[in-house]
Length: 249
Image 1 (tube, rainbow, N blue to C red):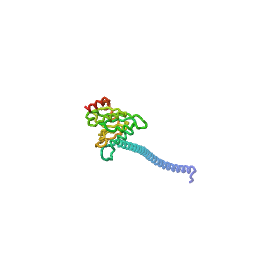
Image 2: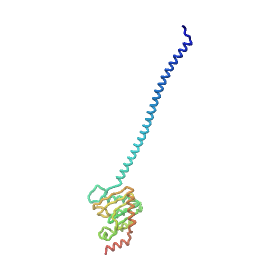
Image 3: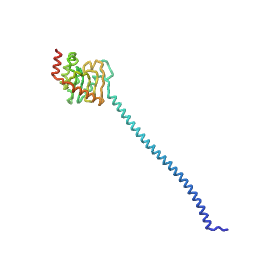
Image 4: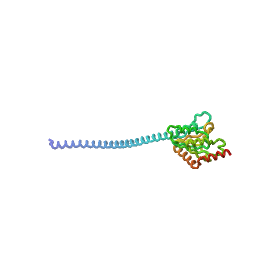
């Protein structure tokens, strides 16, 4: 029995359809697999991006911490430099001396010197050097001391030294409640110690103190000086004459 050409063509079409259907299914399966892989890759990329963001954030935090640490180290060094221990002793010492620090800072003074010392018999030579400077710039000098008969009689207050300091341009006031010993130079350094501005206080006694370079603390010292200054009396010629006459009485 002879098969017609139409039947043969139909059979070929059916066979081709079956093959195409199989291929389509295979393609769809592969497509699903690829889509799943794409989703997985997208999740990985998303995770990597998040990790990258977290990494950048962490790196930024590390950088900030390093900067803060550097600033803290700088502040710590500044704090260490802000306080210097100073002494007076007749013996050799590796410490900075009260007199050495006062002398050094006075030699660098440019604008203002503030001094508190109950007893003054020394240090006028250091102020006389101001007049020898080439720039001849006037330096504002304020001194607070005591003016008590017994102190004068015992030689703890030297009226002649006070006159010398006045002649060198110092404005002097007295306050008989004074016991503080301070020297402030240009509001940039403050020397506070147990030493009076006497030869013994600056050379032979055992004295101790600190040199401040911290701006806030220096401002407090200056304010304390100004408070005492406002409560003190001018060391007039009459006050000196009265004290001198009391000494001779």
